[in-house]
Amino acid sequence: MSDSFFNSSSSPAEDQDSGREVCYIQSSDLRSFRRLFPTIVLFGSEQLPKAGGILEENTVLVAPDGRRFYAISYKGDLSTWRSKVHICCQTLGLLYGTLQRDCLALNNGEKMELRGCTFASYSV
Image 1 (cartoon, rainbow, N blue to C red):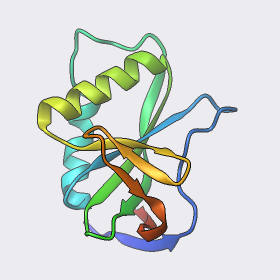
Image 2: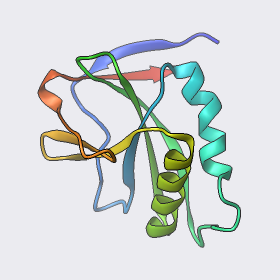
Image 3: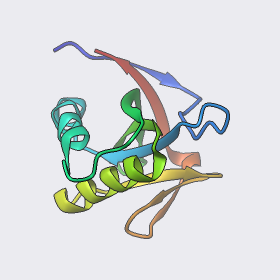
C-alpha cells in the first residue's frame, strides 16, 4: 500500500449546508485506520441508520505530541450514525472528537488546541 501525504491548512468540519457531520478518530497510522474503518461501518448491526452514509475524509490531524486523528464524515440519519461511531469507539477504547472553534474536543474531556496541530490530506 502506497500512501502519499501532503500538508493542508484546511480541515474537514461540519458543513451545515450539506448536512454532513465530521468526527476524528485516533489511530496509530493510516494502515491501522484503514483496517478499523470497516469495523466502524459494520459495528452494532442492531443499530442501523435509516438514511445516509459514512466515508473517510482522507485527512489526518496530527497533534503536537504525535497522536493521529483520522477524519470520517456521515450524513443522513445523523443521530444514529453518530451513536454508532461513538459506541464503536468507546467499545474499542479509541479516542474520538469533533472540531469546535479552535480545538478538537475529545470524548475524554480533553480540548486540544488546533494551533499546534497539522492537517494532512492523503491518497491511497
